[in-house]
Image (cartoon, rainbow, N blue to C red; front, side, top):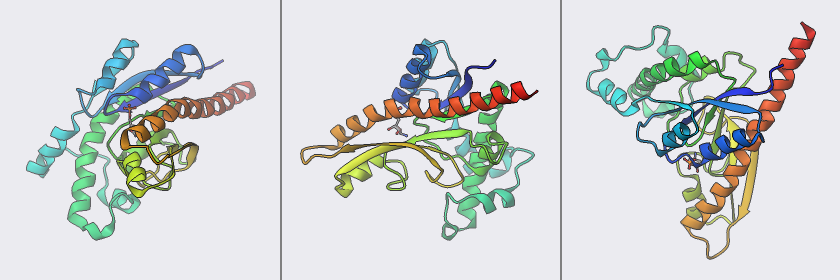
Length: 250
Ligand code: GRF
């Protein structure tokens, strides 16, 4: 019987969350195996952590794909099944008031990069995609290719704030600047919006008067390293149970 889920990870930076997950996998505290680690940045330090653990890695150069599209939109081949009207209708990342041109540029240029990402990811046949400090938003084009069953979320993210407060790229910074007395982190599933999908778990910490941006980030990260493996394990237990029940029924 299957007793481990297959997970892939995407990162952009140092990968301390990835490391916590790798460690939890090797200690056996989570029933998961990380089968690849990918990045939008070939120099991401987290890729080295994965390599050290014997995990296959790849990078998709988002920056140059987006620049290529900016320079010459006609030259970037869009995926054959990319339907701009369908994706525009689903997306909530960019508000309508930004204008059609901006929305289409965003969605088309990302789809070019996402196609390259999918070419790497799909052959691995994963049960879960873990975003661990992956600093790119994903369009409905990509999300639908991973979440093939509409009722079953397969993309998980960790966010450095207590959602729904402070979505976006700088959760701890926003928490600090607002003057909050409590900060925290959230693990959630990805949907078509920005940091808006169903919440799986959260952890909070007190913010004292002498806390700084750095101490807040430190307190938050330490909680992230506990919370993310726990949420992955919650997902794994449920999926393994479902799969085993299906095998027994057959
Ligand atoms: C974490 O704070 C995470 O919440 C956010 O990006 C940061 C990634 O840190 N999404 P690391 O690369 O895991 O060290």
